[in-house]
Amino acid sequence: MASGRVRSQLAISSDIPTAVPRISSVPQRLAATEVSVGADIVGGVSVQIGVHVEISGLRDDREQVGMTMLLTKVMREHRMDDEVFVSMRGKGADLSVHADSGDHKLIFSGFYRWAPDFEKMLTARATQLVSHAQVHYGWEYEDEF
Amino acid sequence: MSSDPRFAGPWDDRLPDPVPVIHRNLDVSVGGLELTTLTREHLEYWVRCIELQRGNTFMVVEHADEPGFIQTYRNSATDFDLEWCDAPPPAPSRQAVVNDEAQIVALLWAWLEGDYTELDALDWESVDRN
Image (cartoon, rainbow over all chains, first blue to last red; front, side, top):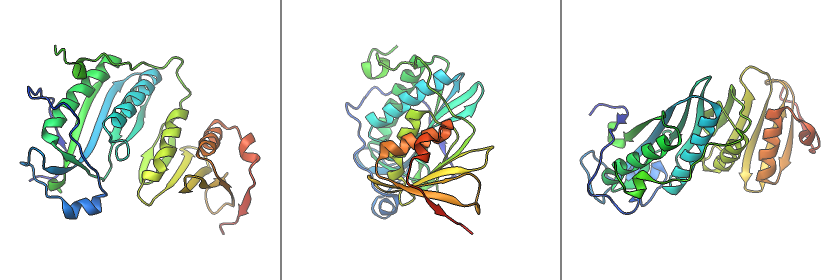
């Protein structure tokens, strides 16, 4: 399998989980020895995934600060705030906000059901705040290394 | 259009008014992560994140185009080493101990703002790095 980041597409699921399915997180060194992963694993099996979200197209300080507050809040609501960190980037009228787990991988259970719903929610929420914002998702799978 | 409230809101997110002060063109590192832009609220967020950086609990703050830096090392929730230097190494610096996370935020922000009143009031120890 080719290495690199996978850009996922926004998808609409007719079978929506009622709760965030992510169940645990452990340091990567431990996770790498204890968790089996694979691109075709679904359901309740855990997978290790790097999280990268970019919200771009922000045109001024107000939009960037507001989007930073939103993304920080969303990461906290989804219990990723200990491992996915929010930063502000850019200058002039080319501003963006990022949420990034760096080299660290989070452990998800039910990821393939959760991710499309998460993307749909965050995209809707971000564009409600700033209508011209563009939201990009990068899910980095452990087996791509 | 979906009517599911998880996807359609309403959410209470608002753009800030007034817009807070933003410092750009910074060289900030927290653990292994690099930042260029901070508001005071975002600085507070990142100081809270220092402990999450897996054994690399430094935060270094510099202006990209100016000499000098201020950095902190988090020993515990109530024990921060703070180092302030007006020029890059090997220029001498000064170090102090700060026992409060909120004070660390205030001191780092004051440094970014160029307000050294509270910094000057700390009990500094000179460090010769030659």
